[in-house]
Image (tube, rainbow, N blue to C red; front, side, top):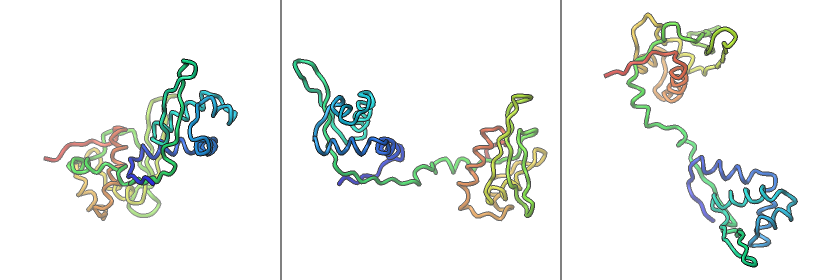
Length: 206
């Protein structure tokens, strides 16, 4: 049994193929017949030959089958053979977060931009923000996107300096909000969204 640590994209690709309605029937055929062509599989499973071809080629791409060109009366076609009868998938979800950019972002000094296209809605209780509403477009093209922030993000955003106030570094805002540094990834995630929507003014601390 093969057990390899895979990138999430690879796992996603495998899951995409194996979750199809006809996947189990295809693999049963490959176990029984050992080798099969797309036309043979299509006729046995009563599906379109293009569907069979694409699925088989997909299994080749993810390393479950091998594909060989053969000739019948001088006419070439492909046969597919199962080369892995068992797979064991392992992935590390923590790799989906790129920690390498944290150090640079922690040099940011930030504040809200003047006339930023956003509405901060305070929570009914406590010093925190309950949600933010991002605004794009004008007139009939105006769109609003409401985002419910987490408790941690809400406490941080409550202390985000106003446009008329001096910039503050992230560590200082964390301290004012009474937040631990362990929540930095969560804070940087919302700040990235605000940066993308031109809500915060950033300058790098030297």
